[in-house]
Image (cartoon, rainbow, N blue to C red):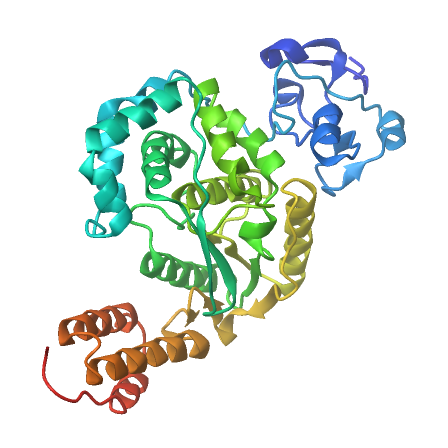
Length: 427
């Protein structure tokens, strides 16, 4: 039987079945399940640009004329969002869990942990039940408005604008994240290590070192593409992020609360310092994770927030993957790859999360190590001048030693600590 180029969608695609929807790039049994397709109207409303489709191979917006020549027609969808690259489960009927008094009380306890004696926490705690009921009523009647955040800058390792929410807003953030974080975490890949329970800095470094060992056994000499996003938090496209969230959260009350938090403060991107920013930023790049693992089928891939590493057999393959990832990040996520992203030879060590990693050992990166030593020297000066206690200095010292005890840096640590002098006893 002769096969024709134009053919209808599969019945599994619900509203996309029938003769007017065609299978452009996939098998008949999987007509539109794993295509990256944009709805032109939604992108025009949010971005002001027209995109007809996204070519799966080149990951560049396809011209409508080229699609017609290839026998491709635009695909329609019954409901948003505009991106239907990956099949996922959406969650509804969770708003009552967010606004329950028990959840708000637990959120208060989390937000006030180790901050009980701060002035704004004491004022909130003075009339705890009344304040929680007031927040609950504002959420129920859709009258909640975030308070202005306290903004300040930090300068290590570079200048960053921090936006610290008011305490009542932090309670709301904890209440929201307590419900939606387990739902979003279910769709995260295993090798996403940012802001997740049991997946901290030391875990991601150990995992990457394990990848280098396995890549060495599989490929011999291997290469790594080390990439990150330029100004990730400030440049996050909120309109695209909101559409992403609707793919997982179908509860209108939760969606309205997320939109209220995202639109507060007049930020272009996500504010650094809010609990919700960490979770939603990680969720935004989860789409990159699924693209890498499910579409490109890359075996050795790992990500820590906006820093990621891909291990390949050849440098040419690493450069090709870097081009695909750059196009995806720009075309789908609305972000920009950092120009410092580069291809590295595996035997030269991979710089990642403050360490340089080889299959056999790892060493601390000099900039991060020097910052830690400067911080200890500053704390020693404060102790010697009587401004902090010995216990406070000892806590920072133990944290420093615990962080670097897993790497080969004994001589560097001993040399640096021998130059720090403590004078006097505890006060």
